[in-house]
Image 1 (cartoon, one colour):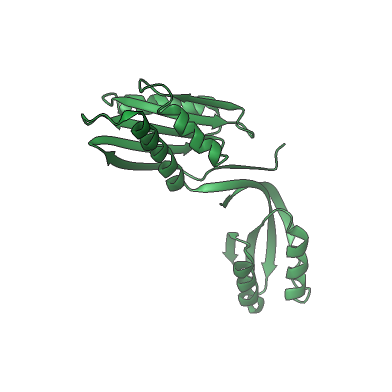
Image 2 (cartoon, one colour):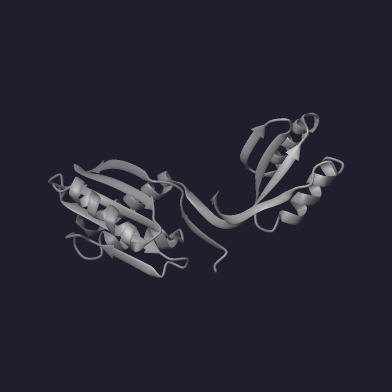
Length: 210
């Protein structure tokens, strides 16, 4: 199984106007082709009166499934430019849809390519680009007098806090980037003079900002 892939964090929607044509860009993280097609169908129903609903999606750890459509725009001016945005950013498990309401002014082939490329790029950026990496989740049980020191170390060391509970002791679960597990555990033990020993809770894919 691949150890990392790039995708988007969440759903997004952007909008802009070019020579009176209105472009609405949407982006989603999707797990399957069926999910991508279901979202596409929903947008087609919502924007039934749009001039075009063009799309591109990539599915699979290596983007093995890749589909796009110009939806009536001149060949190569919509779907392919959108797919090129996904390829350039090496994104997968992602769907981008560009809805266009024609404003009466022809954009020309070059103008269409630029507009659809911008729609895809802006929608992906708004969704947040992440690298999905197999990440270790470590649990720590910290006495209150040590918490300030540990909290500062986690924050400055780039170990995001996933869960935090204040009970008889502070119970925290921290995310550790791939390849840093050994250093994380050693630093924690040293920082707390051996009073806190990290325990591995689980390991799963997690999205790190890119």
